[in-house]
Image 1 (tube, one colour):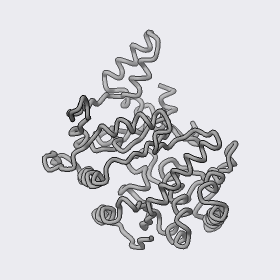
Image 2 (cartoon, rainbow, N blue to C red; image 1 turned 90 degrees about the horizontal axis):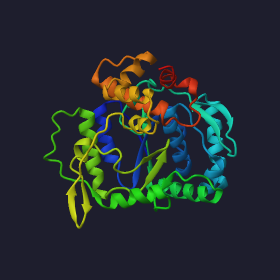
Image 3 (tube, one colour; image 1 turned 135 degrees about the horizontal axis):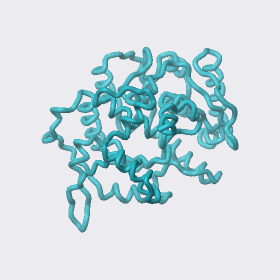
Image 4 (cartoon, rainbow, N blue to C red; image 1 turned 90 degrees about the vertical axis):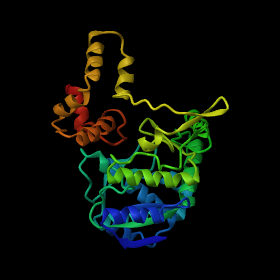
Amino acid sequence: MLVTETHSNADCVASLERRIQSRDRKLWKIPEPLHRRMSRLSHDVKLEVVSMFATWYATGTCSVNQERFEHWARSAKRRELTDFLALLERDGLMRRTGRHAKGFQSIQREFLFPRPDAENPRNHCANSSAYAPGEWRCLVVPCAVSAARDASWVEWCNLTGSEVHLDKNGVTPWGSAIQRGLKNYRLPTDVSDVDVSKLKDKQRDWLNKYVDSLQYGLSDIVALKRNRIFHAASNCPKRLRCKAQFFHNGVWEQAVVVDVHAMYWAALISMLPDCPEKTELIKLIQSRLFYDEIAAEAGIETPTADDKANFKPLVQKECLFWTRGWGYWDRKVAQALDRR
């Protein structure tokens, strides 16, 4: 199913998402030139292409493992995908940026559309209501197609001995542990007593959309991305997370939310042997100037609270959880940390 309306107003975006997004359909937003060329593709190929676009939009590069895709969609769809990528290259909407990855039939590519500033991570999501380049259109793919792709991917990883990054049935230790926890975790669906007076419009809209999604229950899908584990409660709004409950000793108990400043860096520092450098790092984190000094070294200005909040995940992405293919010389924050 394709939604061929064009939208530019933020309120219209939010309204459209609430109307379309449901348990059995997944909404993606893509540039109009790409949308127009995808109109006759099968759902399998559409999903693969929009997944590539989302990855490229977030990281600047993308690829598709042809062997993995054929295991799911079979050889005819693989030819359809290959022909479509060639069409995008011929029309100047995509280009190859690398050779086949070792051991896999996948080529690094990039789409030739505007991307948001790499220093502004708020916009690094093609599947959100954030910035979209130029005119864009909505593409809706049945969730059944996405679920089949996920299941086939796990099966392919098991057959080839590859690392599994997606767990729906508790087949991995990390996935099983998260799913056990989620079974004993619940969030309120009534937010009438939640104070939203200090929330921005986007934050308030996200809270409402997240609460709406709870009518279907928490998803049991757990993903491992960039050495981090993501699950249904990972992006839970803070106002809602503070009201979460855990089932413990036969009763539901109020959860306690602890926000640890520079948590990942604190964990890494704690692993160092006792030395003057470790003491200096501890003082730096305790002073809450850790990110400010990295920003100054990288030449990135963070004068407002929003700028500081946006810089923190950028540091984590460039220095801790960068994706394969994102070279060191493209990560100027990582270089600044080395110099520091």
